[in-house]
Amino acid sequence: MNIQDNVKDYYGKVLNTSADLQTDACCTIADTPSYLRALLANIHPDVRAKYYGCGLIAPLALEGARILDLGSGSGQDAYALAQLAGATGDVIGVDMTPEQLTVARDHLDWHADRFGYANVRFLEGDIERLGGLDLEPASFDVIVSNCVINLVEEKEAVFSAAHALLKPGGEFYFSDVYADRRLGEDLRKDPAAQGECLGGALYWNDFLNMAKRAGFADPRLVTDRPLAINNAELREKLSPAQFHSATFRLFRIDGLEPACEDYGQAVVYKGGLAQSEKSFALDNHHIIEKGRVFAVCGNTFRMLKESRFAPWFDFIGDWSTHYGIFPGCGTSSPFGQESEEIASSGGCC
Image: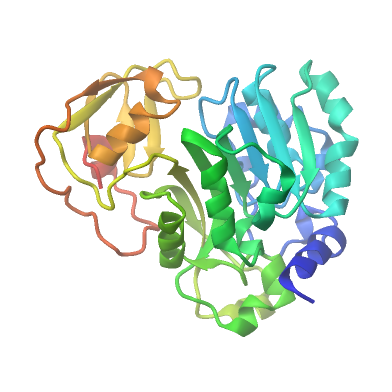
């Protein structure tokens, strides 16, 4: 049985609800901000019961956005995003598991009645082969994916397709599972390890290089946490590898530099963005307080100025003088590196 068949079988037949999972990859209600819990309350219980993601994928500033959900499963993320996108937005979910798609599609009318508008549809397809779904290139504002890329064999094809489908300045915002090393072939093909999102986990540095080859020059880590493996047999089989659930954001912006270069630039967050009034978190090193001049590298400057976030910022500086590289732009593991001093002081890396 190949990886695609393993995944279909595991998520369509082996798992009945998220309670059957053997790791703590799935986020719980306690992990979810109050405004997102309110959105989940508007989602049908049958859809929520089949949720197998490793985080709730809901970046800010989605009103009116065109959104693509890769590996949408039973539809929980898509229906949550539909509420954030609103009546003028559009959400498309793609999944290859018939049982999951049936749950998602069976509740389309229920959610349309609940929301007061219908802005969601689901397509059956393989996210490694998005070219066969007749999706218009450069047409999406945001693409999301929730603990799915580890389940596919041709991971680089997913990143390349996402890059092609995003508008310039668009964002691929996704959660997945990463390993601290490359796993052996026996673990990568183990059905239980695959189904639990561990066997197919990318070594974090392989992911970074893969994303860059696809055109996402400067991947940004938003959040991460270590994963606990609750099944003792599976834990022993995978030892000593360590795993993290992490959320990254990748912007389709041509010409981003491979490191954090300093041009003396800064931004000022003006506030006004829903759910982010006092500060805006671009990533785990850029928590930008409202009204404060915040020094940034050239890449961060462009990510804010050339994306949907631009209306909420003032921009200071140009490209006339280069001051070198920001300190700390290294190559060690990105996980567990949050720093209160860095996050609040305006340092780039």
